[in-house]
Image 1 (cartoon, rainbow, N blue to C red):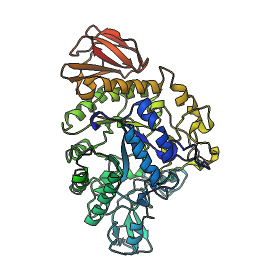
Image 2 (cartoon, helix red, strand yellow):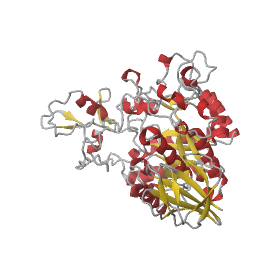
Image 3 (cartoon, rainbow, N blue to C red):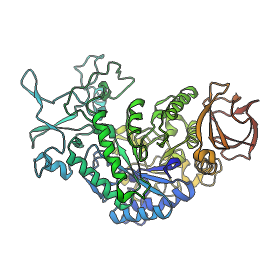
Image 4 (cartoon, rainbow, N blue to C red):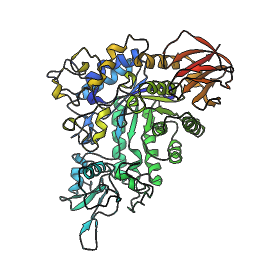
Length: 563
């Protein structure tokens, strides 16, 4: 199922609150998600959902700081609610993928509380170190490793702090080491100080984490999205990272990027083993009749990603984030896709991603018209396709006031996490009937015109486009199983690719320009009919001659089938 699956990411806290919950809390719920499953499966047409963290958590990092891997956060519901969600999803033919946060826990987790006290064999479940002494005899962290969440230092400098630094000096990152008075040692935290890193070099830790996987597989989940997996692989000799001499605050922004990453994360000798062991869980005898899958969030170079993809291609693959890092350009996109598919093991399953809970929303990043173009292009490429909730409506980032922010470590991510806009005629756009000041994050009032209620019956809306593209991609054999091949054009602003399976062929043309473009294409067929457009959505099939050429509207993606 996974090879061409459309997977819909749900951020539970702002997706939908069960309207029967009393009192309303202004927070999404598992029951709310269950009620929206028919929308996802029967109206939009997706094949699976991925749930961002719903676990028990003190919410220092919006759920990615987990205090219990086997409990539900009470604000979202309980385990009975989760069981019913799984049952309803499977009844509808939907698979369930859940976030597995493997690198770190909350500092409130029982494991960490026992580790800081050296209790019950938990002494080295986390990464502890007494530190070292500087030339003045002061205790300092054991190395220069930095926290990914170093943006607060940049913001502090913008407020006038770090006045002792020269204008040309870099803002220092936040250390990844936190002194713990109770234990009398430093512990490592690659992210927030409330998120201590697990010690994956300890086989007992690995066994515990594999038991967590089995717990949820036995509950009925069909796969895992593994968070920040490359941070699990560390050089336990704790060598300093080298300085990134190419760093500039204007280009990179985050002081964390002043260091190259070869020891604090991306340490491949260890990482390969850890991934292999996790994949082995999916292959265990009790799951042999299940269609299980892992997708790995790894921010690494293309060669390193290829290595991870080759570890267990039958059950796991890495996210393909390449397109999100490119400027909007036909030559660059062609190059990236050609490289990606050429180097993808035939046994593996590729994927296409336009956005998620950590990235500026697609429509805000590229603009409304180009967002539609990017969506159409992705739906007709091989592999899994990921949709972040609200992307199908063309939702935008919100400007969240400081006092309303939840993402306290990296507040710039709140803008893409605001509530779904279900119906602008209802209170809080149909997300919740709680008082507006109780909402987990505020409604983006600038997006009320993009509500689902307004778009459902509009044949040219973003929602209608997504629904039509998903349906068409499932109907055409060339898109279900066909190989990818980019196709030469006579126009540098137009990217074209073919999908071919046996005698079934299809072509996709993408105009990367904001102007109308005339293009001819050296496709395997010359006479075709356009069956879907990012501009007009469904068209009456229009015959086109690919050899003689055709016009593409500004920012248009067009699907062409042979006549």
